[in-house]
Length: 222
Length: 222
Image (cartoon, rainbow over all chains, first blue to last red):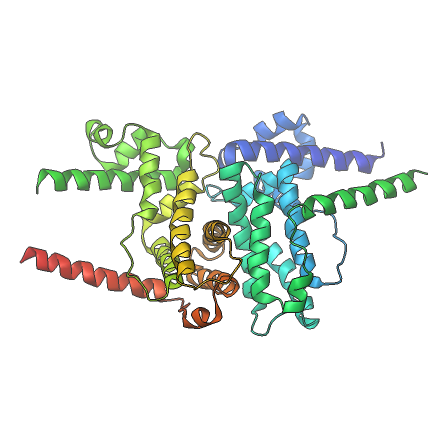
């Protein structure tokens, strides 16, 4: 294995271990020693990648924005639905993403700046909504920053409610309900009629992206 | 002071102490001893009112639904806005309510059933939406349980985002944005036009209720 590959794998192993420890104990109670034990790497290796518990936490926080790029859609607002659908799907299937979102919402983590993910997703949404507006997809009077941030806050709460009531099983449904309500209030009628709100869209898009990634790997290996 | 009054005050003092300890340490790390110390009551008094840490937690969880009844409105959907506005206002001003909502969203509280408040608020919303539907305030195709639960989950997340980004200072704005979006997707146009989304509505309603309560007290004392 090339040196760089090994470093990437070690970094990943450390992040996965940190995610498990933060998820189980919360940020405040977790220690570097617990994370070292879970990761099975040397202290030197850990400190090479992350200088502190805060740095580890920021590594985990960044994971929720690290997903693959989604395919562009003829209707821009569809991309807003798609990124939420895929995040809802990843929350159910990827424990690093789940730990990342739990850490964002860890109220006891008083020493940790958890505003990053809220700002990141708001900016992503502002970008898509601005393009949608330029293409005439939005009703007049939509305040882009308000809608962008509403999506972020509402999603955060819906996934918490879903976790509490159904261990994430109903999250795709709750996300679809959010999208139907917000889109009917911001999209012009012709665009609204073209949107796909299906609850299995996140799973379908993720499967498609994995097929593409596998094909690229196979091509690169030839 | 009558015996009953004293019991009510002691119970309140214990709940306030529990709220402070849960908010600071989280449910998992908090102990009855910490709560006893903070409340300044005897062990006997505490156990008379609450048999366990879980019972204390449920006492705190119930506080968020304990607010005064709001005045009925000619448009039923206004009552849905009003209860959210008042809760947003209480979150900023009443630390017991704040602790209650934080405890509902305390992900580390694994031994505690935190589903109660999610179900309570969903039921309250179903009731108002059903009345609104009977009066012809809702568009056809509104699925009452979906909208009712969307409000609960979205509010939970918006208050977390508001806490993280502005220590609750922007919560009334975020709540008003949520209401504008959801109401435009469920209310018939004539009702939508009649709704008051002002951001200071929660503070105004709370002040009115306090004036009424003060007047009743004064009348009772005569």
